[in-house]
Length: 118
Image 1: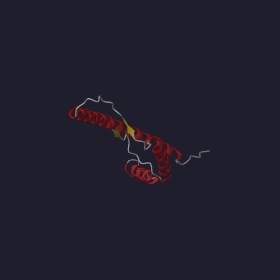
Image 2: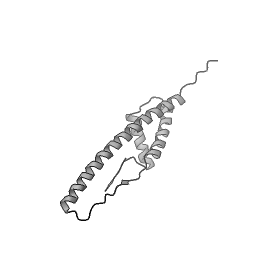
Image 3: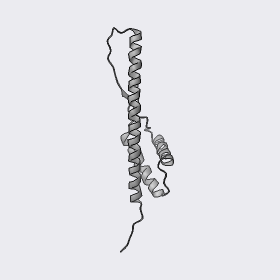
Image 4: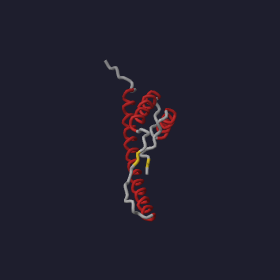
């Protein structure tokens, strides 16, 4: 049985689309320099922290199970694994959003007009 942990895209076009969606819905900003900085940072974060590798698990069962026992174990394993997977996805998404907000603050600070009070 295999289940994907996160479904973040790896192709450049799909990463670009995801970054655009995040910037348009979650991290809207008026300053184009901040948006440019944030766009670059988000692309790097997605490529670094959300690889497209599939996660799979193998559960060894006794060979003398009948069909009903096997199906019951399979169903239970799938439900438990899916519940855990959903929790991990929510946690990863929350962490990623917090990281995005931090990166937005960094980009704002980088693009802040300098005060030259000499």
